[in-house]
Amino acid sequence: MRTPVQGLAHARGCLKTGACAVPCLDERMRSAVGGDWRMRVAISKLAHAALCRDWRMRNTVSSIAHAQCGSKRGTCLVIFPGSREERSRSEHNLINIQKTHERMQTENKISPYYRTKLRGLYTTAKADAEAECNHSDALCSILRKALDKIAEIKSLLEERRIAAKIAGIYSDAEPPRKTMRRGVLMTLLQQSAMTLPLWIGKPGDKPPPLCGAMPAAGDYVAKPGDKVAARVKAVDGDEQWILAEVVSYSHAANKYEVDDIDEEGKERHTLSRRRVIPLPQWKANPETDPEALFQREQLVLALYPQTTCFYRALIHAPPQRPQDDYSVLFEDTSYADGYSPPLNVAQRYVVACKETKKK
Image (cartoon, rainbow, N blue to C red):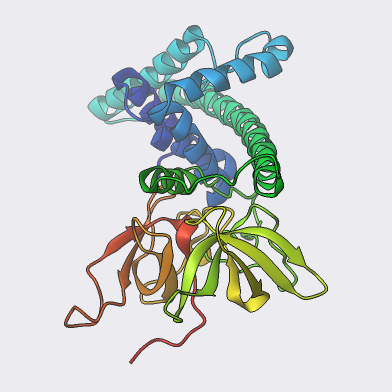
């Protein structure tokens, strides 16, 4: 484990070389939050999105930070706050620490002069590291607020979409909408999986229901527009699990009305609650909440790639990073061992299977 000063030095090196700043941020956070992995990884992942993947996100965060913190501090808070002068001073201080140690090793003695000098240099370096940790906390707070606002906007857009859908289905003046083209539907499903929000809790928080593999609460009722796995009867009479969208729920009858996502505007299914499994509403972070993920060889229902049907499968490997998918083995009698080669399925489309594992 690096000391705060070493972590700061590592961070400065990455800033010079242009390397990813997330590991540096993690190192700087060690001295401030100790063993609190949730906060450190949360900040790292949020910063990763801003720093390494999307420059537009980086500029947006900078603008938000400027609006919220600029007037108070007199400076603009960006991904790595602080002026160039401050960074230059910190780097110079770290270089002095390194050179002082080298001189001590050369002379093979620790004089009172070197002790006093190092005490002052380390005190300054520690203050610099703590200041950057405080800036990181502020950044995390800003990003949390931004994520909450994004979730609010997505919720409003979903409500409007549902209202438009209901108007289109039940209006006598307008014909039913045509079935969506297959390629477009698959793209939308993929985008839905990619944009599923990552759950980031505060220190000590447990993953909530519908986070990754966490089941829904016993009294949970899916809302209109929610995507679910629904067990319906196929044309040939067999039952299958399909990806569906909730239309309504009757508390009196304890039944859902759902539409097949692949047959929008066509047949509607009325199903009991036991035939409907809500899909995850948050991704689970493997680095902070591995207990919220399905584990190897666990039996699940997974959406087969490029289809809208769920099939029984075994977890081959759980995600290792928040952006990773599950690797699953689908039951397939055409293979000697009864399972397909490993296929990737997003967290969004993997749910628990209550049926027993086949022999």
